[in-house]
Image 1 (cartoon, helix red, strand yellow):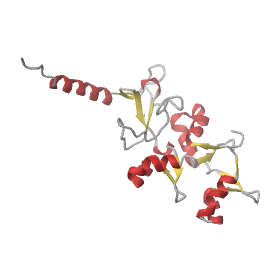
Image 2: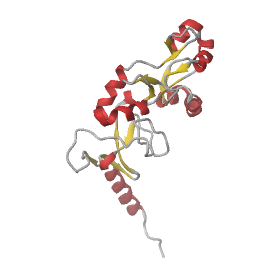
Image 3: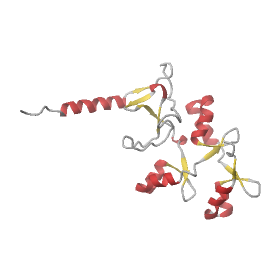
Image 4: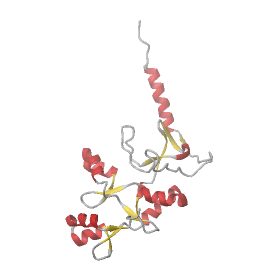
Amino acid sequence: MMAPRRVPGLLLASSLLAAVASAESMSGEFGQAVLGCACKGGKATHGYCGFHFHWGSQEDKPWCRTKYSCGKQGLKGSWAHCDERGVARRRALDGQLYNSKEFKEYYKSDGKDRWLAAEPYPERRLARNNKAYTVYEFRDYYVDALGEQGWVPEWVKAKPEARQANDGKWWTFDEYVQFYGQDEAWGKWDAANSSRTDL
């Protein structure tokens, strides 16, 4: 007796999954049509805008899990592409800031390890309250008032984090490098007072 043919069933299942993944719904909290989706934020896996590299995602554009089933539908919930200017960046050994995709492209198979090693050096910028926030903290500070699209321009125009040097002046990382040189700047930066001490 011949075994039943499963190929058509698999093709049908994969077609249905592809259709679900490509379906897009631009809806808000009350089911109303919306201009764009809101990211879920920090309490959800992949809730912030980023390059979330894993077996099911090798996206070339950043994305986030979204609220209210807005955006594209996937097996793990709704998601949407988001503004690349609002993704986390970390400082690499050359002193420059890069996002996780740039680490992956430059360092290839070592990209993930290099990204994780750079965790102590996230990009921070000053919010209106003069506190230095990472991009995700900055989003959390502004998103209720400005919305998902409104906080990104604030981030882009915000001044970079500065730390208080021995002379009492506040310097950015780049200014530490200019004064102390690339090698000595890292230690001076780590030892300097931050506007985050009460966060």
